[in-house]
Image (tube, rainbow, N blue to C red; front, side, top):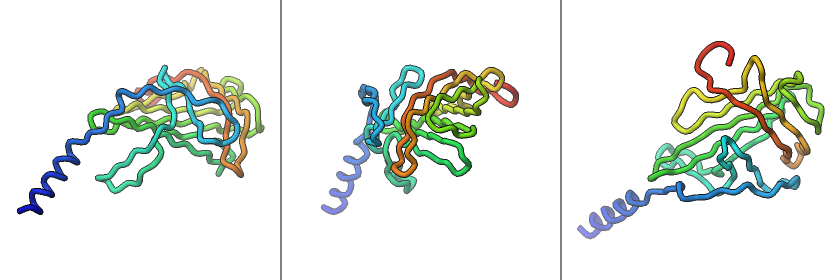
Length: 172
């Protein structure tokens, strides 16, 4: 009887704990070029920065940083992919952001979508589909790459531009 009561109390305690990140106020980290895990950017006025971990316990997934990104150069492109997970009343809401720079890589310089550099950008808000893309007809996006150190996993720079709601096949 005591074991059953103890199990029920622990279960009730676990179920009553509901993480809520809605009170958090985020600030952009200082700009660095040292590789000190300071990824941060503004997207539609919201700050994206790494501030902890999220875990999908019930799906068996591992815990990972709340904002993760990686550099991939398998085909000569540069890819920055970020996932941000915030909790509201214990429910995770995830957002995805991706920049891929497909171009003849010229090292540190400014890459312009309108200047012939191929830049794909995608953003998917929480619980929404489809997401937002760079326009196909008049892409307004720039990536200013200041540092890329593949040996140490450091990418530094700025990006800015406009994204448009993707509503289906055809030009955006």
